[in-house]
Length: 314
Image (cartoon, rainbow, N blue to C red; front, side, top):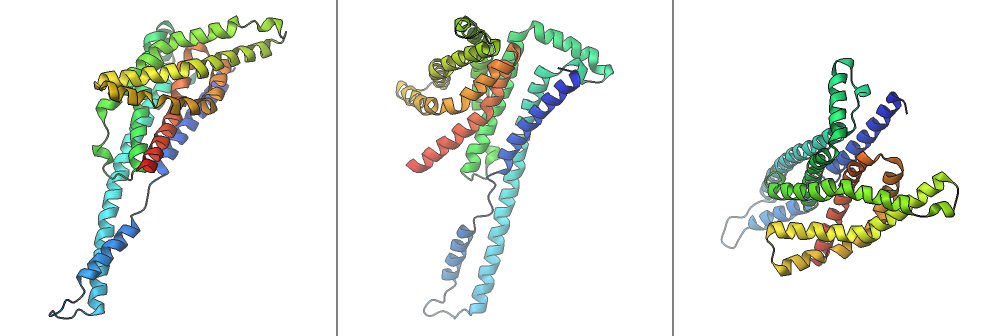
C-alpha cells in the first residue's frame, strides 16, 4: 500500500476513534432539573401562605418571591452544570489525547512526517520494532488507564453527579492500567502468537485449496478459542487481580467473580467481528493495540449496563 494511502487510512481510523469518544462526551449532558425547581418553588409558595394571625401576603408578592427563587435556583444549577462540563471536558480530552498519542506512537512511519523529522521517526520505528514487548506493555498501560477514566466519567454522568472533578479515583486508574498493561500488553504479545499458532495448525488444506478461505477458517478457529475459552479466563484473572490489589475479602472476591457470566454472555456479539478483523487484517505487532482501542467502547458499554442494573435493583 502506498505511504499516502496508508497515512490516510490510519488518519481516518484515528479520526473515527476520536469522534466516537467525543460523542460520549456530548451525549448525556442534562439540562437543569426543572421538576426539582418546581418542587422547591411550590415549597417556597407554601411557606409564604399567610398563617392565622399574620398579615396576608398578596398573590403578586407570592409570584415575585417564587420567581426570584426560581431564578436563583436556576443560576445555581447552571453554575454547577458549567463547572461539571468544564471538568468533564478536561478529563475526557486528556484521556483522548493520551489514547491518540499512544496510537500515533505505535503507527507513525517516517513517510508520514516532513523530511526534518523523518530520520528521528525512522529511528523510533526501528527501536519500536526491536522492543515490541516493552513498547506494547507501556502503550497498554496508557490506553487502559485512559479508558478507565472515560468509564468513570460515563458512570458519574449517568448518575447526574455534578462533582466529577472530585470523584475520579486515581488509585483505580493506576490499578486498572497496571493490571491491563500486564494482561493486555505483556501477555497479549504472547497470546496473539498463540492465536496465530492455532490458526496455522488447523488442517484446512484438506478442506479447501483456496488460500483466502484457509486464512478465514484459521481466523475463525482462533476467534472461537478467544471467545469461548480465553474470555472467561481473562475476565476471571482480571477481576481476581483487582480484588487482590484492593485486599478484598474472600466473600468480596467471589462476588466479583459472579460478574464473569454477565460479561461472557455479551462478549461474542462484540468481539467476534473485531477478533476476525484483527486476525485477518492487522499485522501481529499492532494486534494488541487494536484490541486496546476496541476495548474503549466495550468498557463504555459495560459501564452503562452495570449502572442500568444497579438502577433497576435500587
